[in-house]
Length: 387
Image (cartoon, rainbow, N blue to C red):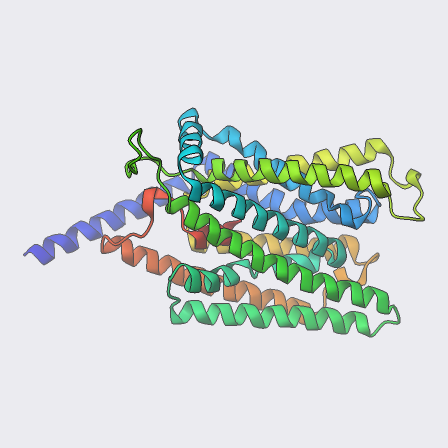
């Protein structure tokens, strides 16, 4: 009888959850978040390519898009509450290990962001977006070895398929360019692909560090004891802290670099991109990055792993197709080939398999009352899928 009652309660809760989810997905605000998130995710690499081809990003070593992205992260602090900020200040002053975690995460995130920016400036958006989709796979592997989270057989299969897709992308691009006489372009795109992959691995490491920091610390009371009832640092506030530190560092680096070597590459006329065009381009990047980050955090707890993978897939396919349509006549690496289309399909299939398995695992844990989500925080796997 007790087992029957438990089954009945479980079925009722599942039916209520399904009914709530069905109603939730019809809400205009949620649809607006989806549109903003997907739309800005598509625009991010597209606007970087557009500005790069118009020489409005200056020297590649300036990594100007990184400053826009980190500043956008810093602006997300407006989504936090005064109580959240007070909790952060107490934690920062009372817990040395949290300060070390904060600085370590900021360093890893900034370095990964610089690598990713440098990579997209060399490869272009079409190649970059496929390689960047490997972040969930790298996050899964790092979570297994550093957070002790086991991978299911389906998750491991998804990771393997993603790796196959990455190899297809790299080999397809290098074969496409090696058939031409311009070896400099081939070397640039190949080096850019390697840089992007290194940036993806570091970015995954950032997710793991953030996961440990957000879940592994508590504020302390006046007596020095840990306050286990204190709320964890919210992801928007965590992002804002990191973005503020990274944006300050990047701004200092860019100003010093421009003072030493100028803004434009040697041999490039300053009239190629006027100051108003530069300001307009940077403000556009900043606005898109800020809106994308805001939409990301506003919907972070409202969408599952499968939905995250689907949104990521929509963005990737859209960027690949739009890059081929708009930039292929100017850069061959942006053109769509059969091998590159196959690589996109493999990466998306692998990501979707991993997401489906993650979603099933979470549902089973919730049904057994074994949810691993402390303080109602989204998992590192969901964050890496959606981000």
